[in-house]
Image 1 (cartoon, one colour):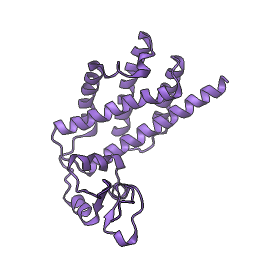
Image 2: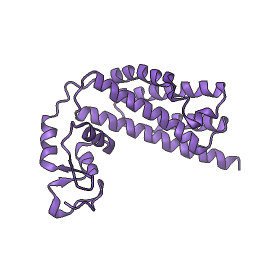
Image 3: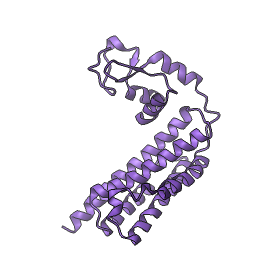
Image 4: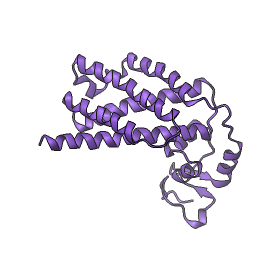
Length: 220
């Protein structure tokens, strides 16, 4: 297996017993970052090339899929409720104040951004609780909210993106921590929930950028 291969490259026919990170993600139906997280935590069978790239044996992945138990997976809404407290604690510990974009805001704007973190949590809870995979309306509303708030307080498109990613990543970290605290073993249901979270938040980010650029164009 050559080190020239990158983690997400197509693997040659001669190496069909091996899978790339993206290949495993497609096989499991989860986001590549979920596979990367499981691999780095040692809960998913992974091999490394001498160049440091992750590689997966098809047989080991198939066995993991058969033995992975989802019966202990925490309900998404319960996990979100547990994560809310962790998000508030992390924000209170000064992580938000350390952000360069946040330091540009006055107190009124800072209060607005703190509340936007909770709006993201609520929107995500609504999406996870529904059976629909349609992200359009909720994601558009949240993307518009982040874009218009950034414009109102004089943040650039880059800072607006950083603000959203701060809250998104803080929430993801809190969710992972909630599952670890509950000693829930990684399984396909957990991975698919993470995939839904990424799908939803990616749609928000795309709408944020589109809305911000549209607002700039309308005032140019």
